[in-house]
Image 1: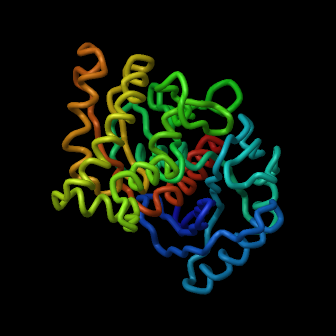
Image 2 (image 1 turned 180 degrees about the vertical axis):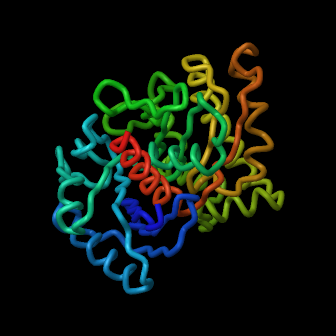
Length: 308
């Protein structure tokens, strides 16, 4: 395929755009702020405007577009059934809307599932057939690969690992108490930081990572707590799916050298030795535009299957 694919990653804070070639290389990128008005027509128009801005930066033109969306995408990959931070989206026909406005063939997928597709094709999960990926940031999303294929479940909602229950009660997410996202998503992260940095400082996840990597005691405590909570959840994933690898990404864990130094030992304390044996705990590799790369990869995979 000589022409690139357009990838669009719709997030609660930013919408990212990129032109991606078959090797997964980002040929051109753009990021815009997600608007406060978040009904479907508004988001589609912002995506159209961002695409025009991206095209103004290059002579390259895509053969199709992949869209990575937050929330649950139906099994037919046409609708966003519901999405956090996009409360007006209720069975929103995002794939068709994007195809119509961009005048390109389009595919649609869940953002973290497509991040995992990119990691499998070009990143940390290359060569693994059975793995679980998660992104820890504002929320906690996930994806499951079985026998080399993304597992989407009966209706498209598989991989919601952020709803792994690690306590009988505790912080609730979408009305479900005690789930790991409530403890290590951004709200839980901020509560931990507020306890340990009570003097008016309020470090971001990036700052906590930098401080912990430099040996700051309080920042290391933050990552110790996050690692403890996450180990509770990941142990359950190991027992359920017996994967070859677990890929950990997202803004909270990006570059978190100290976290990865301590996490595996904490996981060993919670998981059976039979399920820890041989499993690889790896940081995600692709970085800030991984969702864009995954969206483009999903289009490439879908287009290849159509030709078979």
